[in-house]
Image (cartoon, rainbow, N blue to C red):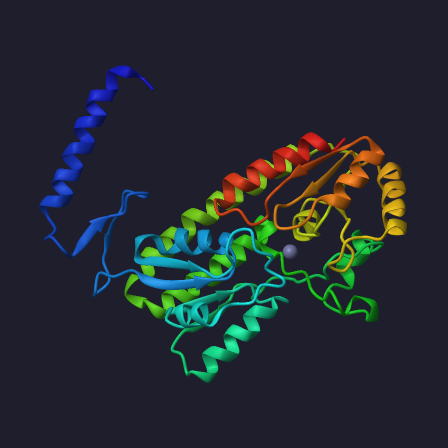
Length: 324
Ligand SMILES: [Zn+2]
């Protein structure tokens, strides 16, 4: 920046904020620290409580809701979302929320929650964040993730009944945009007085997600071997969006047998896989075993991190570095 104009900018900023504070009475409005925009506070001034299942959803709700809302995250960091069982105390807390944003795909605890809300006649608005997302099957071992998988997404083959649909919808920035839209619609419904504010926040965040998507495409451009191995198949939607092939180590939610491991090692060699991705919520033992056999390494990537954009930038850097 040109240093000569800096004092001028400072003066201008101070002047503007004085002007802004001078023409509104205290209590009607405040300035949103992240956007610098002036916003009207809700009648009571208290933030609206919105419950979500997993951390990335909290990020989406906070980006759209700004300082009007407060989030409660149901799945604690480090817990496995597929098997998590809420305690009665947690159920009570979440049923106090004005809105609950579900993942909406194959998360058993969410059904427990929704049934409970219905039985206690809760006023909580349930928003299914997967609404409008094209769902696909959870990738299984020996299941080709190429073009064919896309075509029969949605139908459950007999041998996939155990695994069902892939709930990790947020790992695709394109899906994240749909989830953000769903969050916006929910917030506009429970707090129509602030609809414009939510719409502005949504638009700003959608732009950031578009930029993220463009950065990821650029990083992965020109990679020839687009196969990667991962312990738990969390990156199926990411793989589909960026034309990558995910090979899961875990088999229907379980550690692979010795026989499976031998097959995985052969597959890794054949597909020139050098890295096996893992996440902290799951054991890394079998991923480690495959890595040793192929002379590769195990790298942790977190699909459940809160700071979505920074995390996806980081994850795609790791992918780009490890694809040939
Ligand atoms: Zn998972």
